[in-house]
Length: 284
Ligand code: TXA
Ligand code: MG
Image 1 (cartoon, helix red, strand yellow):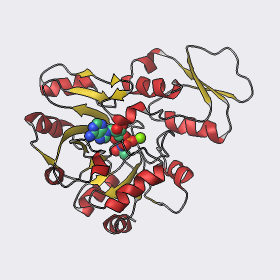
Image 2 (tube, rainbow, N blue to C red; image 1 turned 90 degrees about the horizontal axis):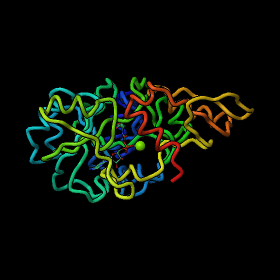
Image 3 (cartoon, protein in one colour; image 1 turned 60 degrees about the vertical axis):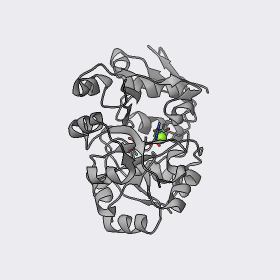
């Protein structure tokens, strides 16, 4: 299966694969057609750049330049793992990948299948989450098939974390621009200075993708501290990082019309989970 996937990527085809965060919909970074196909398959706006997944640091040198010391500090501690670092891109990378930006997001996945794919291909795989644009990310193979059908080649595996990677921007004031399993505090400890969350202006966030309504099921979703009764067609979900997306998808499959997401102290203390819940309940 792995060999077939590598062969497909080499031939300019798109394949889906598990990572430790969510499933990715991948293409060789050098295949212009496959990169475009990702946007078409997902219905993804062209102004939303893709993350490059690498198997080793040598692959970062193929696509990035002027890597600062902070990049290596973070890579040493958090790679491979659920962290994406924004760095200056090299000439020659398709504008489709970076949506015309001068930076590229680099992540070294820890999942053995994702890692083996990147190493086997020998150069980076660009991959957004393997879901139709606006739908909850896929954390199981059947979610990928539900969105894209059986024509797509999908490798199977488990996503242990269940939410997308933390994205960090470096420079004089390093900041987390998308919260994930690795916290700003952990990053700050490694860099030796405080690191905060910088989501930016909602109309012009630092991650272009954050301005789109994301992670949304078809049901109406409300975030409430308690629920006294549930009518037919309604469901209560206790949000957890690992299962949230799967539960939202299941609610749609069961034609649930209203979802009550329970607002608990534990949920509130998870910044990444809260960030996704805010997007899920937002109507824009
Ligand atoms: O965990 C993850 O990161 C997963 C797995 C598959 O690796 N990938 C993922 O990709 O979540 P995607 O495309 O669904 O989300 C990537 C986010 C988008 O909001 C995009 O705008 C932002 O990263 N992004 C990518 N490149 C960027 C760049 N150069 N500058 C700012 N934001 C960037
Ligand atoms: Mg996504």
